[in-house]
Length: 232
Image 1 (cartoon, rainbow, N blue to C red):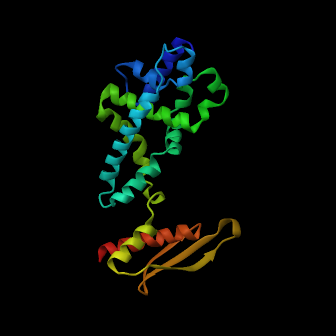
Image 2 (tube, one colour):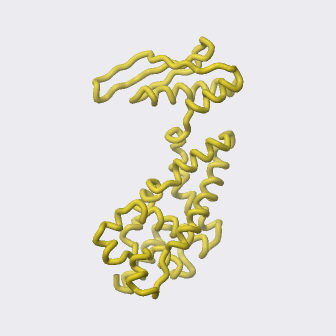
Image 3 (tube, rainbow, N blue to C red):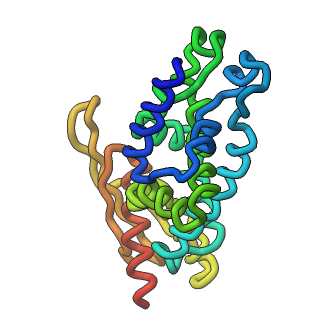
């Protein structure tokens, strides 16, 4: 990339990030893969140290969001939820959402091998960008950036919380018994099956659930049962 193109890309990326850097050099470093820095024999710093810092900033920020949004979630489930949303796949997807691949500075070999589409490079670069915002504008600025990307993802909590496991632990602790699931009905063609499941605890119906798979239906039934148990 020519220097003027790099400058234009920095402006465009800052607009997408909704954050204007006081020192654009730290953003440039966040976008610099080690393969690009190596080709320039150390004239530019790569983003590996920023990636390390960004990982910590992300963990703290997402942990804070989980504490705020799920006040009744046990510690173990909070850890699982955080791990479910802060991973290479989700970070790479977010990097693509903000158009990060086209802004990356990659070495010739990495460019030829499809580096702009590698999840590991995209995830690491996203972490580095979060660290760059943190270093340039402080934690509040970084938290705002993290929140704008992760709040929507965390709203889909049903994708991550294992209600069956939580219900089993709860019934064993309180009632000294296990929940029992039974398949009530199946419908639809083989390629689009629909399952309905009932959940009983000590012979009493506590929940019903529907889903595209039996496991999904059981999760829905367990979620309903959790709600009823919390009311007793």
